[in-house]
Image (cartoon, rainbow, N blue to C red; front, side, top):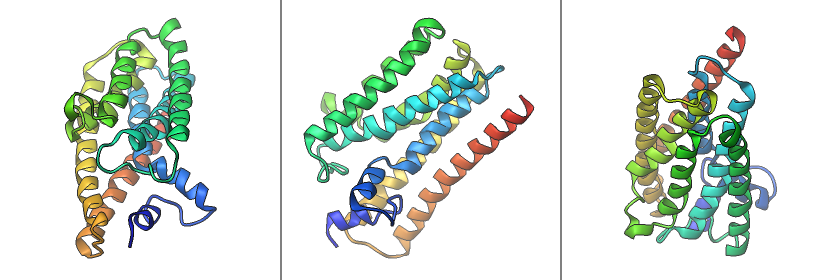
Length: 235
């Protein structure tokens, strides 16, 4: 099985629809994008007062910034394997990255300028990681599982809380440690899974890793959805 077949047969790629649709959805890495958005939403939900426009704004920011922007940059910048880089031209990937990242920062800028200036700290850090991680600058210093878990596991929780309150407290910091750890576990399993997948392995070992990835992402998204519904009900 060649690399292209492997990519289109990944568990997070839809089995239905036109090939272009499947490729585009696959590039979004929806299970992990969903986890990252969930972390940002959880950060908002632990605030004393939840302003719903801000919760949906931070969810949109991470959907655009990670789901589209960072994944497009990843397909441009990775030194070894370029996820989905063979399916898009560099011009199209740059267009996707610039438009989605610009949209994310425009949304964020509105809140940062008028309501939550502390969010600039997270915005600058996330922007740095988009390029430092994916383009492996500084000799790949930031292209590690630790920095991945910080940028897309821990920081989203802090961003979700800050956009609600313009402050930081012990509770979201503690929660960010948990989500960062969960991201670290997920990316560690994912790297092993992808390495086996590229070698064409189909045994129970890779099946167990795929099951673990599905379980972590599904449980994270389901838990966040339950907390979201509960918070909407009780206020």
